[in-house]
Length: 450
Ligand SMILES: [Zn+2]
Image (cartoon, rainbow, N blue to C red; front, side, top):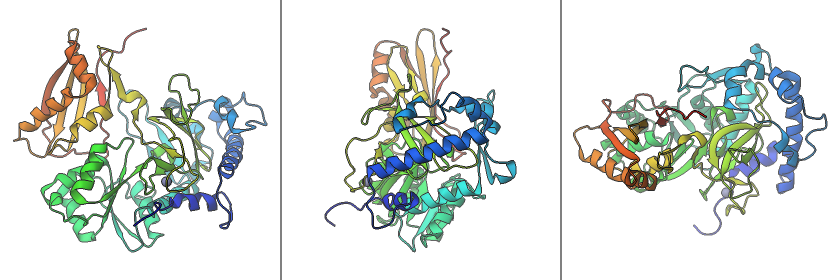
């Protein structure tokens, strides 16, 4: 194969969904026109139908926004707003709600976030998944889905519906709780594409039966998460010879947010339905292309619960310059971490979960881990518990220690006497029981009082 990589299928999707005829090329001006037009409509709709936005947006003039530059003057919506006022954010009657999703909570003291979707909202997601999946799946193929949501409107269900529209077959296995059973399903379904969370798919590739799959048996993998460790992508490609693509999305986006094209550098975004921005996480000011900041999005077509300038807590940037696939659609770089997922060590060095991911996922036999930071007397203590399937291999723990100490922030904090490595241990379980759990770096130190 020579020449240019295939154009992202999202370009044709955006073009038709924003009402352009097939004979016309999509331009950046078309995109901007769509964004501002939809944004005006969503502001009117939200103010008319949601008590929360009636209050929050009461200071905006009626002809607002006049252009996309005005976007920065619109107040943000935060995770706290979702926790405290989710019913006030609702724009339709409860009978028009087709699905309610309650997000898992880390802290039992705070109310959970609830998201509401109408049939129309779910259909928009299926439509996006349909076009997005044509990047990596051909008609007639079977796809093993290791994501939750077999029930109506869940991610598995929506993805299966999307695949059916391209004559592909989705087989919902759900999150992997027993790798043997997941590999049985891979065999039985003859799926040659897998959709799942990075650590879960890695776990299958490291399982003795997964390791023995002939190269090319799994042709493509779609990893979906807020952060996809490069170490996992590399290993899946080396071990299985599969092409690994990344999807970026969260429940608040209606599950789907963006997907890589064949170039696999950054995500093309769900432009017909979502307007993305990157802002300074502290001041909230817009960041220029190429500069990292917090990802913020506005739903442009959501009916049940539109979100306006919702702060995701994810860190990324717009990649400068056009994508080599030839589209005019911008690209959001792979997410580099969470705003809240970074901790400042006593030494002043910053440690993030992605740092630990990249260090530990290269260790053969490691399936997942949990990390925590405690306050010791004058020093912080980093503890790590790992899942390895087998607990009779102490050399894995030696490896964990070695790789942690190779992370620059850890190395420097240890050298300055401000950090020690606490107990590094095996989890009593062989496999992380909840497939959907996200790794977190738990900061158990007291918050400084100001
Ligand atoms: Zn591209």
